[in-house]
Image (cartoon, rainbow, N blue to C red; front, side, top):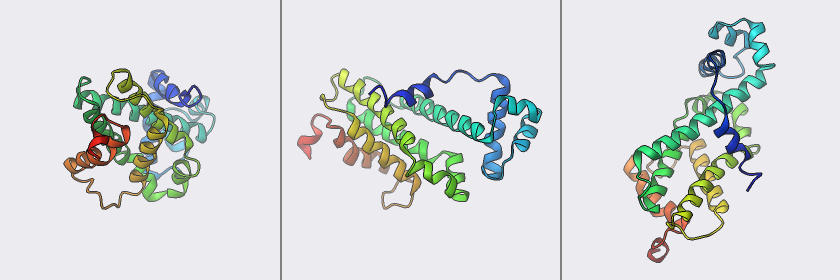
Length: 216
């Protein structure tokens, strides 16, 4: 798993932003939301963050570097938001099924509620879709490795049996991404209760929760 966990480690270990970096990334994100990535220039980002263009280029040598930095920040925020939501909504002493249900809910909400992702999918799908489909391995890796950590913790706590967590983790990561990219579905995801019922009936069993297989 060493190779697979590098991206998650990179996201988790991203250091705190200094004041100017935070200003630049805030300005870039707002500009991307306002104009999209293609129409946002480095000049516009510099104007919005109150730095000279030369100073901006000293920090980010190209627009691609800036886009990558915004993407890394978005990934870090996503991971932190999922961590925080799980801590708020579920007791670590809860059973595996309850924790799996909540994880699926917050995972899906995090993807479907991402404003930048939604903006780009609606206005510049040709830019973002390759990075979420045919070139989407890093996104899948990040979700898979997060889920692997989650499953391994439950296994160590004796709440799940021992098995290789990577295949099920990848399946759930791919399912969540697909649901985020194609929100039109017969599954009533607008109803939070229905989402939890779906996760309990169709997702939890995939994790081999003790008792669920026997019920199935």
